[in-house]
Length: 187
View (cartoon, rainbow, N blue to C red):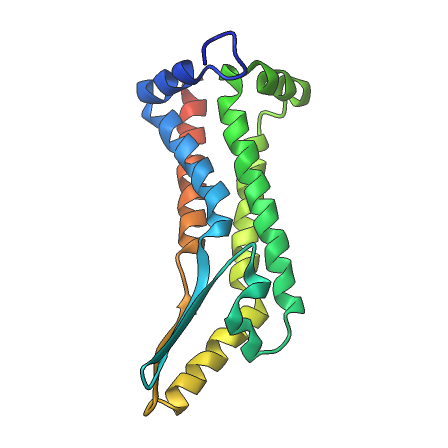
């Protein structure tokens, strides 16, 4: 695609190569958009040679088998909503960053003209991370699974824990924030 197309890919790649701040801003936004799909919680069980494992991504957390330990999936439904909010925030951050190289996105960006939008979205994502990590049903499920594994440790080996999702999202927020701040200082 060239300058006459919907997205000047070559121009954008050169833009990223030219300045490290732009690259980390873009990578941070991509991590935020991907974070709802990576595991946020994980369990592994080995019961006398019979192995079972599952992971719960933020968007699909109500389908995470570990939640059955508590029995109430209503509390984790909010996590899917948080995942969608995080995904949309990541996509908007990506589009905001790509705007100078896309006529369509640039026109939309100029209509809204909210210079602090990236910071607002990063704040929203941070709130989503905190709410997801404080989710009572997920915490109770992990604790219940750990107690069962401890109680039956003679025949049952395994683990139940939080996974990489919160870290991926947090790293994305930090990278995007640093990139936006440093890019903004230079004009």
